[in-house]
Image (cartoon, rainbow, N blue to C red; front, side, top):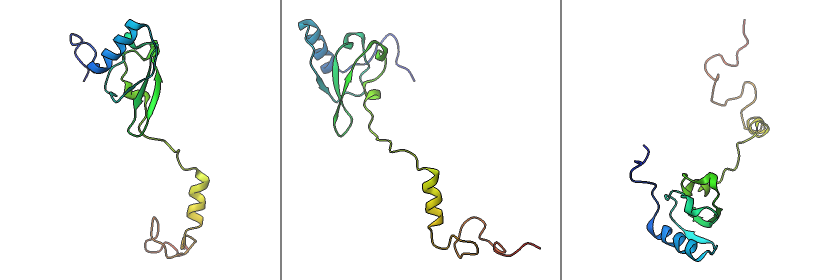
Length: 119
């Protein structure tokens, strides 16, 4: 469910204070934050925020296209290692013991009469 428009976007106070003070002093430096739940506002555009992902801080440069999104969307917490390829699956099945025809392995089609010739 979306947040009410009359409340405005949620941004942690400590983060907004840091951004406002940097805008007032017209300085750009990396700000470390654990606030993944904060919404990106137009005041943050042009700043670099180091967002914590549970293991390390990921530097995120804020652009205009990011306004309205949450900081956590740009700092992934999981690392995708890829799906296994078809070649790996075939090698795994071919190398398994009892996987040949008439083998004693359980699995699909290993019921009664699975190895018997059809008449």
